[in-house]
Every structure is written in structure tokens, then in C-alpha cells.
Image (cartoon, rainbow, N blue to C red; front, top):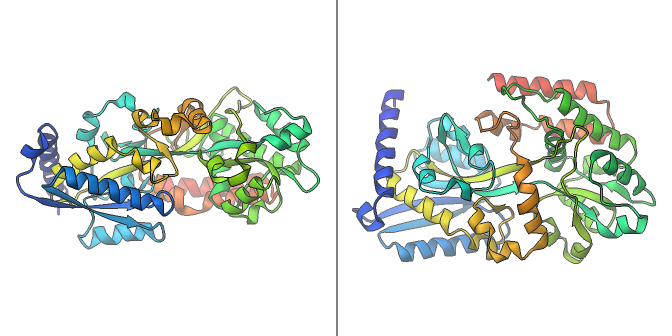
Length: 420
């Protein structure tokens, strides 16, 4: 298909979707249709059950449309979608990894969802979530969940040592050093994605990140370098569990839950996953960096519509309904992220959980995506997220290796990705 043909087809589909979204559902559908919805498993075994129940509810309320639900495992998830697209058997819509939509959109496989966004109140979305899905002057996906990194502490360890909850980088470093000893450490992390999250969390917390405001690779920029040196200094202090480089996230969380470390970086629902340790876990308020900056890293999980759909109008209508009615994905499915919609986050399920309420009120507003400080999204973010060079950098930091050479190698690799 030529680019001109694709553009015409895209315009026709969007016009049809726009017309249908402006009509009542009975008028929008002339014939019974079947929609395929592929959904990643965003929690444990309860999640796909709750998601299927939500689909069943939609089907009961809309007998002229039958949505077929498929739970997709994370193992080889990218190959699953790419293979389906190549074979002409892509779903009508799906959820997926945070940067899947923009990469597939760039390949001509995803329809923008501008018309759905136009029907929703932009102020009902958590700060920055809509902007994180804007590319090429279109919304390439609709936000539904937000994963975010929060710094947690052990109340019992700090109280026993007479250490106050830190409020800035220097206080955190001092606390971690004081709390190290007798087989315990100031903090524990891992050599997998948890370690990468420390790199992103710290750089953004210091007003830096992977890019500068013009979108140029800037992992070696002044603020990011300062942040990574800070992590190296924590290691040099002896405050980081030396096993961290060889740990995976579950190892690190387990050590924290057992009281073997005072601080850990984790997802917003970590206390609820800690079992008997939950009463001893508190949230460190967003730390102030040496220049007065605050911030953390987030990922905006989204829904996307595929260009292969033969029913764009019905797919867009279902997409909006799913977004409007997603509460049970958390109340019954125990989704592991937080809602992108403020109206859903206002439910007692979230507001009645003090830890979750604090994250929603005080941490989400200062969170930024991997594209900070340039903002938005772009296809290369998917490769950056899965490439492994940031993992190698974080492992070298936890191993106590000198920063300069490893940072230079990571910066060079980032530049290669962005040059493609």
C-alpha cells in the first residue's frame, strides 16, 4: 500500500469513527460486528478474570457488538503483536507496553485516537499522561494506567536508629550511611529493571534525564551525570547492599520486606504486596535534589487501535466505554498500576488506602516519563526501554565501577539509537 493510499484509508476510517462517536450506539452500528481485544496481564490471576467480566458486561449491554477478550502473556509479547500485524491478523485494539503504540504507529499499524480524546475531559487525566502519548500531532493511544516509582522506607529501622525521614539528597545519603551495619544496609536494589529505574528516578529528580529540552541525548548532561555520581557515592559509602547487582527485583523487595534494608524504590502498591511487613513501610516524600528539583519516573500504560480493524467506529466506541468503566480492573482485578483517570482514582478503593492516596495526591503530579525533559513520545523510546544498555550502566554503578567510562558508553549507545 502506498503512503497516499494509507493516508486516504486513514482519513476515511477517522471520519467514520468521528461520525459514530457523535451518534448514539444503535445508530452507529448497521450490522453485528465482532471485535478482538488483546489485553496484557497487568496483575496476577485475578486480573484477566476481572477484565473478561468487564467485556461480558459490555457485550450484554451492546448486543450488536461482541468483543472477544484475549489475555496476552508478557513472554515474547512484542513478537506476538508484530507477527499478528505482519500476517494481517492484528486485533482491533489492545493494551501493551508503554511505547508499543508509538512504535507501531510509526510503522503505519496504529490508528490515532484523537476523536476519543476529544470526547473526554482532558482535566480528568493525571498530569502529563495525555501529553506522554502525543506524537506526530496525534494521540497514538489512550492512557488508562500509570506506573510510577516511589521511594519507601522501613519505619522500624529508622525509629530504632533515631533517624528522621529524609527530605533531600544529603539527608538521604546520611540516613542510608547511618542505617548500614550489622548485616543491614541503607538501601537495596537490583541489576534488572529496578536498577534502571534508579537511574531514571535520580536523573529526573535532579532536573535531568535521557534528553535535553531539544530532544538531544543528554544522559551525560550536567544534571544527569551529577545524579549518577550520587548513586555511585552511595555505593562508595557502603550503603548499598553489595548483592544488589546480582539481584532481580523480587530479591530486593524480599530483602526490604525482611528488614534487611531501610530504603527501596518500588511501584505504588508495594506496601500492599509486603504481607506482614506492611505496617512498617512508609513513603519517603519526594526528595529535593541539590538544586531544588523534585521528580520521579512514570510510565503511561495505554490502549491502542490497530489500522487493520474493519470496524474503527465500533472499536473507538468500545475504547471509550472501557476507559469510562475500568474501575473493576482495580477493585476486582488488582491491577498493579494506578488509574490515569482522576474520576476513577477518586473512588474509595484508592482514597481509602492512605499510601495510594498519598501517591496520587503528592507523587503523580511531579512524575515525568522517560522522554523528560523534551516531553511527548517517539518510536525510539521503545528500543531504549528494552535495549539493555541502561541495565548495564546501572549494574556497573552497583558494582562500584568508576562512572566515567560506563556513562560514556551508555551515552554513545543512546546517540546511536536516536540516530536511527
